Image (cartoon, rainbow, N blue to C red; front, side, top):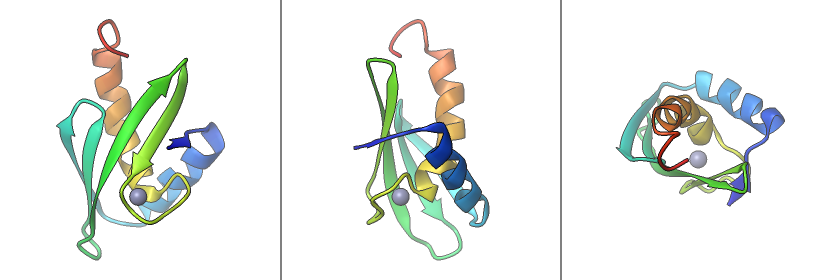
Length: 87
Ligand SMILES: [Zn+2]
């Protein structure tokens, strides 16, 4: 599990923009990200612990990757919609 920081997230979003990413919400906090450039598909999962944000991706990267960068925007919108309940 990797902690999301402003710095590593900015880089991940930049990398995500260089690829055509298709993001599908599987359930709250869980996303399926397909890279339309090469057809690879990975699953991203977000967690919040004591106010800090963490993310997991099923790809081999050991940093906050472009799949997390691609799906975070969707997650932020969803999380704010549900903030009174589960976040
Ligand atoms: Zn990834």
